[in-house]
Length: 214
Image (cartoon, rainbow, N blue to C red; front, side, top):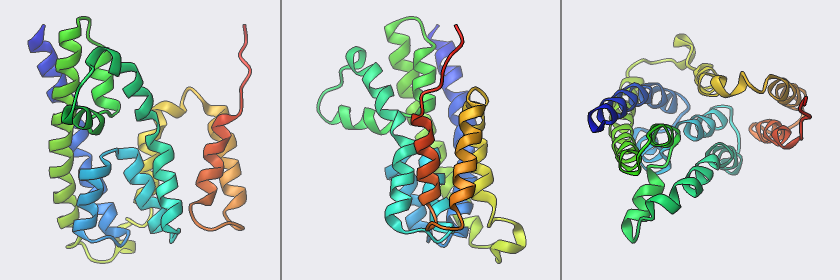
């Protein structure tokens, strides 16, 4: 069984990590230097949050708005941690390492395993693997982004929004009504509010209780 966990973890890590190339190129296109882009991947290490941050920056939004948008996208990781903490129970520095590696992919691979040992193995292998490949790919994308020249000429001025939508789409399919309402709120507020604020208003739509059919 451990062999299957290793295979799954590496497959997920490589597939997810390679997407960091897009983030590196988009981060540079948004006006960040290579060091700033790398720090976002090394320290924030949450793909959706990183794309949210550079998306607001690219649109000219205030830093506090970019940070708030990134936080809203990353807060879900806290719920993953609450689920895993009783079983994993890390101590000392390992607690900080586990927190850093608590992402969608490590949680998903861990949760799909049956035994506690395999759940722990899946979490650590996937988390470490994604961290390695994501940051390597981010560096390659950032360095390559410096060589492409004009952002508009290559269409990267719209790439952040496209990549961000790609990350969200699997989750939006089950909440199309809320997604549509959020989009309408964002579009309606764009002409009147600073860049990034419409994102926060759209996120607030998710708090609206939706009735369920029995």
